[in-house]
Each structure stands twice: as structure tokens, then as C-alpha cells.
Image 1 (cartoon, rainbow, N blue to C red):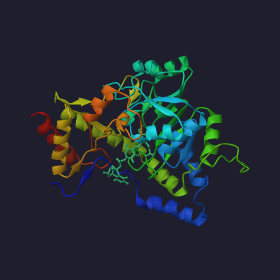
Image 2: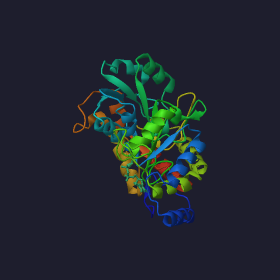
Image 3: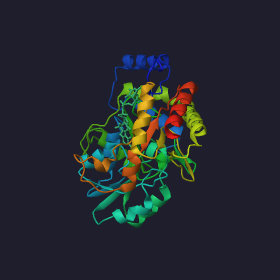
Length: 365
Ligand code: T4K
């Protein structure tokens, strides 16, 4: 048994000394929040690093989704995927809209655009697909359908910072993209998130919504709330973003090590990346033959102090306390048979080797 537990992920953190310097500045200025200098600097850094037109830093990814819905003034039904974290759906519900589920593509694990039009009604106001595990959705097809039916598109890009579609940051697509900067994400501010839009008017509106609906004169000109990021969080983002390239390179290395070790196993499927797309490989999901195999593998890993995670189980359409059940057979089947293996900066080759051996033991029986 390994001495230290190995979890599905670990936050990527810059050296503490780098963060201490930032903290000293915060202590000197005494400005902790309300769009302080570090929040503004972090927003500029994110824009320059990922070549984004505008980034509004907020307190978490769920609030980023809610702000996107609010900024676009959406009502009625929003079509989304059931293969996601609960936050996608809770954001829709908290903004007074109804989630309608569209099934996923079994290869990419993203919302399947070929099923989208069947879910559109006269109540539909928007589509909210998720770039699952950082794997880009079929952005062009979703855009085509949205235009045809005059629908807005919000991408839940919680996992997607660093992913690329047609040589541009994936966050540049849709009316608004909402990302997460949670501790478990590839770029983190402990808790945090952000909205991206190509439309400068929307960016300004998002800024007002984030700050109670204030304008520059502190007049209430918008129906807003509190989505502000603090200086403490932005400071962490500023030191972490400096190391983003190496964090991304580590994820790519780990992805290839797993794939090379596991690709011969006929009973395992991997998430497929579509053409024109580059994933950030933020997660490493495996799709097995049955739920029983998932239980066996999880137990065998835990026996060695290794904790994989069943993202996303159950599929959100089955949370009956939150939503009325709508059948989506592919998402339900995948959700029962998927397991994310550990992937994070500093994950040792010897640990990956052990994990591969355990997977082989269970899946080649
Ligand atoms: N949309 C999608 C598609 C999402 O996946 C999410 C969030 C959102 C929207 C909303 O974004 P946020 O509002 O959260 O910003 C995590 C995260 O809480 C959540 O952000 C994430 N998705 C979801 C997929 O996973 P858990 O339940 O995995 O957290 P936990 O505590 O079990 O952590 C997993 C492992 O990570 C632990 O075993 C150890 C390690 N860890 C975790 C934390 C929090 C650390 O080493 N340090 C830490 O501080 O939820």
C-alpha cells in the first residue's frame, strides 16, 4: 500500500514565496475586494495568456453560469447535457429557467448536436453545452443550430481553460463562456471563476451584475448580485497563471502515459477528441464495460490508497430531488461506467505505472 493517499487531483500551486510577496502588497494596501488592483491585473493576465477579448473574474464557476444567464436575460427552457456536474443545472434553476436535457455523444461525452433540434420548443431561449473534461464540443454545429433557431449559447467551460478549438481559446466561443477556477481545476484561485464574451457591452453588463448592479457612480442600474472575486483569490491566480504552461504540459504527459499503458485493453474506451479540437486533458476518464467493473476497479485502487472519482455519477437527469426525470440513455449508461483516474502536476510515473497495472488486472480478466 502507498504511504500517502493518491487523490483524483491536487491543486497546482506556485511556490509559497511567490504568493507571500503578493500577500504583502495586499496587507500594505488594505484593499481586499471590490474590483481591486489584483483582480484587474488577473483579468488582464487571463486575457493576454489565453488571447481573450474580455474576462470578468468572479467568485466561483456556478455564479459565472448564473451571471451569464442573467446577462443574456434568458427565460423559459435552456437545453443542456445531463452528463455534467450538478452546478450546470442548479445555475439554470436558480435563474428561474427550466433545464431540458439533450443526450450526449458516446465518444466525445459532449452534448450531441444531432439530437439538439428535437429538444427545441417555442419556450427554448438558449443552449448550454458543457466542454466535458476540457474536450471541446462541436462548436460549429451548435452555433449553426443556435443561429437557425435564434437561440443564445452559453458554454459551461468550467473544465476548459487551456483547451483550443480551431487554433483559438475554446473560451472565445458562444455568447458567453463561463469557466471555473476551483482548487480542482487546471488553473485555480482556490474558489473562483469567470465569464468570457466577445461583446464589450456584455462584458460591461457582467461587471455590473457582479457588483450588485452598480454603475461607476454606484447607482443601481442593473438587477445584480454579489459575484466578486477577492484580492486574495486574484493574487493566487496571478502566481498560478505564470506556471500554467508547465501545468498543461504535465497533463498532456500524464494523458499519453496512461493511453500508452492502457490502449491495448479491448474492454476500455477513452474519451475522443473531435477534429479541430485540442483538449487540456484536465481529467483522465476511462469508460468500462459495466458498473460492476467500476466497483471492482475502484475497490482495487482504494486497496492501494488510490482514490479515483466517478465524474459524473449519476447523470444529472437522475437527481430527482432537483429535476423531473427526462430519459437520456447514452448519458445514463456512460455515467454508470465511467471513472476518472488521478491526473495532476507532480503525479509520479511510478504511481501511474501502479494504476495502469491495477486497471490491467481488473479489465483484462
Ligand atoms: N460546471 C461543471 C461542468 C463543473 O464541473 C463545475 C464544478 C461547475 C460547473 C461549477 O464550478 P464551481 O462553482 O465549483 O467553481 C469538484 C469541485 O468542487 C467542482 O468545482 C467541480 N466542478 C467538480 C467536478 O468537482 P469534488 O466533489 O470532486 O471535490 P473534492 O473535495 O472531492 O475534491 C476532489 C479531490 O481533489 C480530493 O479528493 C482531494 C483534492 N483536493 C480538493 C480540494 C477541494 C485537494 O487536494 N485540495 C482541495 O482544496 O468537487
